[in-house]
Image 1 (cartoon, rainbow, N blue to C red):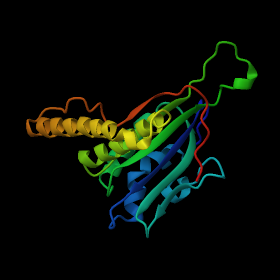
Image 2: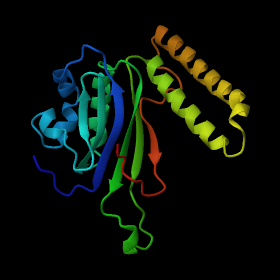
Image 3: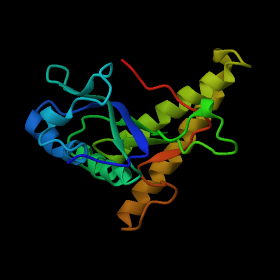
Length: 209
């Protein structure tokens, strides 16, 4: 079904390692909210991105890897699609993985001189994995990478071991809290849910392989 008055171009980018026994049909079912949103009747039909220079949605059978570099026109209701897809991929994932989603405001043009109008661009980082520990591991790795990249502007990489150790300590505390909460049947404290994101401060280039 064609979509009209779509204010955003939504770009989904990420690589998800899946279990060796996962078949194309299982991925097709897991990603059904995405390709149905695009108006397709199957994953094969909906795997093509809105941009020809993007590979779209691909499944590398030999590497057991789901690769996404895919753009679709849509609105903020696509967030519900992402929630469903992440829950579905948790069942198929071999390891933790991050999925970047960018909402580009198609009505905003920096060169048009729109006065005080602001872009509604938004960016969300989602995480999937077979269990909370796997998700925390990829969150930890990304955070360490960001912190080290930022601090290496001022310090030598060899000096940052203590900083990395403190990050590891925080994630160890969070994991212990999660285990305790689950054993007591209570929601984990401080997890903040699966997604992490916020509003962007400028126009971002589309991700390309």
